[in-house]
Every structure is written in structure tokens, then in C-alpha cells.
Image (tube, rainbow, N blue to C red; front, side, top):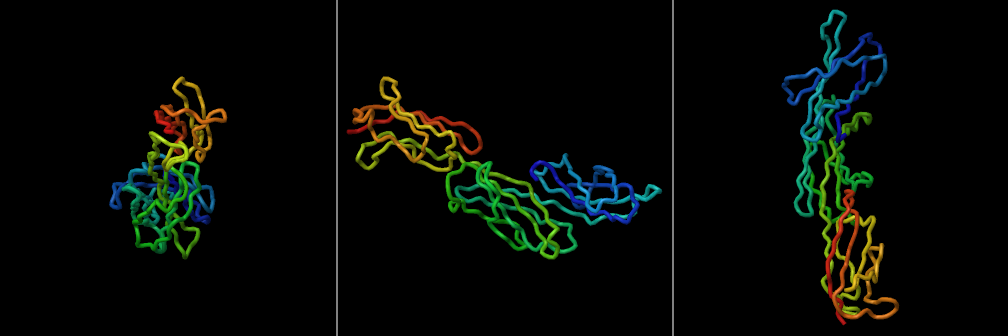
Length: 266
């Protein structure tokens, strides 16, 4: 989770212990902070959300203990460590690194890496790595379509106990849309239509407008694949300077506008 750490507890349902102590530390050697005394009501599974954990900055260590009727802590759980995922962007390659998950009786069998494109994209598994691997390089040239945001998350899994799983925080990389508008075009020439060129953009709310020298709108389109062919009202528009206004919404929700002049050559 990228907002808080969520813990799953498996209490002893036969025990009459009324509550469990939850401890947290930034180091395996402490110091340990008592986060809460969580009531137990005989449930087989209990959940605790640590809303104060800064999961996007570091990993944390946790353990639980129980207190007897005399107020003495008599039993302590295994210590566990959350997964902190971080990364570095270099051109078309995103390098991802994470720490090893700790805390299961058995070793981590594998880490599964998930990726999503843009804010509304679904997470898809892109790599299954053995439990000793804690880094991965993702070449996004293989990602189809246009995008301006790529998200990642890692899951630790235990093949011996499918119910045991741990997720990292989620990280993302933003890509500035690499768009440009030609400064000239010639109908029937090498650039037969006028339209933007580029990638890494989500063209929601896309609109291309072309104006003549008198400010008259002579062409518009909301289809990225459609450009202006140099005609107006069924005939050829005269050679000269025109103005283009391009509006689109990038995948991170930001609305952008590009405005420039270009030359129609006859």
C-alpha cells in the first residue's frame, strides 16, 4: 500500500488474551515503539493499519506480543520487515530496487513485479523473480500505446503457503509528452498533412485547431490520427502562415496547450 502499512495478524483463537501489543521500529535492533494495544475478540484473522508509517520513504520492522493478567509480556511474535520499493529513471529504462521481505517461517520463494500504465491502467505482472533477486530493469520501449505515467509494485510470495503474501509500496515515473508540431508542410509532399508528432501522452480531451491569418477557425479535429490536409470549404487553402492550437490532457490529469505558427507551402 502506498498510503500506510497494513498488517494481518493470526491470533490463537483458543487464547483468552484480551489484546495484542503492536510494535514498530526503523531498525531490526530497535528502538521499538508501541503503536497500539489492539483488542482481540476471538477472531481467526485480525487486521491493523499503521497510518503513521511513511511507506514511501523506508521499510519498517514489526512484531507483536501478548500480555498476561499480571501485565507481563509473555509471548512475542516473529519480527517482520516490510518491502520498500524505489527506483531510478534513465531514458527508456527504469531500474527498480527493493529490500528483502523478512518474517515468514519459510523463505520468500519469489518476487512478482507488477506494472501499470497511466493512472487508470490495470496492474499486470511483468516479471517473476527468484527470492534472492531484489532488482529489475524495465525497458519501457516494449510498452505499447501512448502514456505519460508508469507505476510499479512488488509482491513477495511463498509457494509453500499461498495465503502468505506481502506487497511493497507503489512507485511511479512520469514522462513529459514528447510532442512537437511541424513548422511547415506541403500537401502531396513528404509531409502531406499537418498534425502533431510524438508519444508518451494520453490524448483524452484532444483537440487540434488551425486558424488562418484573420483568426478564422478553418480546421479542427478530436482524433489524434487525423490532420489537416490544407483544404478549406472544399478547396485548397492559400499558401502562407497559419496558427495551430493543440489541447490535450496528459495521463496524470494535467491539461496542456501547445500553440505555434506554421507555413503551408504550395
